[in-house]
Length: 465
Image 1 (tube, helix red, strand yellow):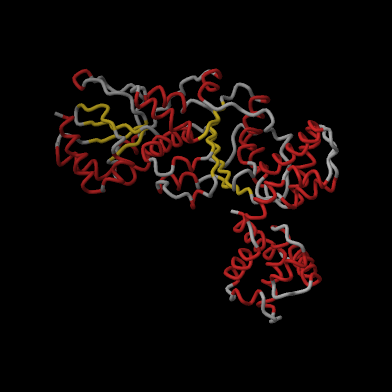
Image 2 (image 1 turned 60 degrees about the vertical axis):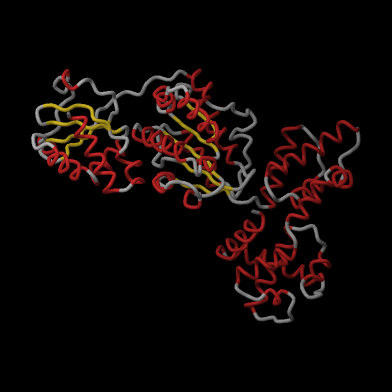
């Protein structure tokens, strides 16, 4: 009888709130106990319990009172344990709520339950293998990544931090995965009792699908919700995958409720992730969001020096500078280029020179040149500063036109392999000294004006994305 009443109430709630809200908040409710005018409803996490109690609690009580006047109290608790037959329901064994809470229309009681144990071997089997090269020691810190690095160190070194989750985002090959592996390695080395699980969002989805097919979702939930630190890489992969998003959302809430740490990476900020449910996007935004910016020349040079040192390879400074200038897309390509140059020298027995470097990397350098053109730079800068594209080649010298033109010249020097005379010709036949002056002026302004520097960096990132 009580089951039929609850089914009817759920049907009315679905009609009132709509399918989306019903799936998100009301469908997970389970009927646990009912006796002597008392009904207990369960939800899997404290966050969901609080939300439902606040937004739907009064309505649920009213609907149940209309359906069965004998029901006087509706209680919402944390816990989705299977309900025993109503005829065999005994008196609640948990401590009663305080009088003030019990008198409210919908009482909220948290049943504290210890997390199910998860052996380290189980965690290793669930997650992806960690790369031993990706440690904090091997991570080169510069201005574009110092904030993300500091946040990652804090998560790795502290038992608990004030922000949860830590959300790392940036373009391909900028160091997100390196930082996540470094966190895992540091925790395993300095606090081996903490259970750390690192995996990709794709692997999370496949394991969830496998659990659905084998009808063993409870085991899946216990495995993922019993770790101390959950790290999910490339979370953008689950965009548009509603069932996986829903399970990830509940896993997220369960871990946060238990005070467990979550670290997530993506190629975009939570607000810009398309195909993500609003509730999940809101949760991803609720912690600390750290952006890893595109690399600077200085950072790329530092990375090359660090990599060469690890490889015990003698690479001339001119070759390092050439690579740092030419390969600005991402760190992965930069390290791959150095690997090729060093391997060629070792296998062929030739010294590493600028000429051999250009010869070995001719395909990569051509691709880099094709990636960004001066015309593309001019168009993007003109759009950004709201001037006509023709002004890039005009003789006008007003600051409103001259400054964007100088920035475009500077970016052409940084992002293409064109010579100074070639760049000057693209800007209305200007002399190479004009280009040199523009580059110097922009570098001076970047050092003196933070807003100007951010504007230039934004344009660089837009062009490289």
